Length: 127
Image (cartoon, rainbow, N blue to C red; front, side, top):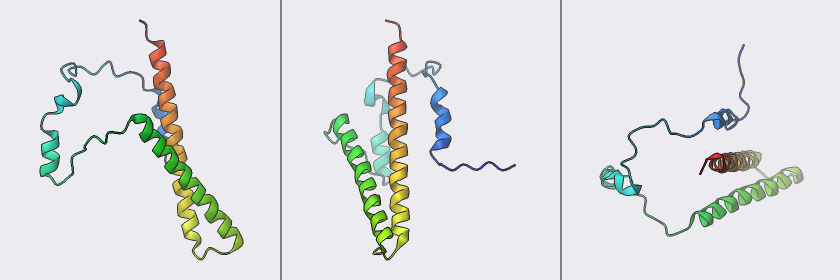
């Protein structure tokens, strides 16, 4: 019998059973990004641009991501109206926009679920 996965993100939901990474040994010597050594030089030598700090806070980056998902959903909604009116010449544009909006929403939901799981794990820790 063949199993059909209807959602590419839905298969990732099984990861929620992963709890802490305490079993990983030997990482105690790493202190921040300084422990990565010449990783930036290796990336620059390979032609991949090094990641530079943008100066933006995590909250502002998260807000920008949510605004991007909202914009994708608004675009998909407007294209759906155009398809219903018959004014959209290429219905594939709506299909792509709707898929992009759906994947963005699924990613946002997965990130939210992981954040809630992390918060609950922190609350279960003993002082």
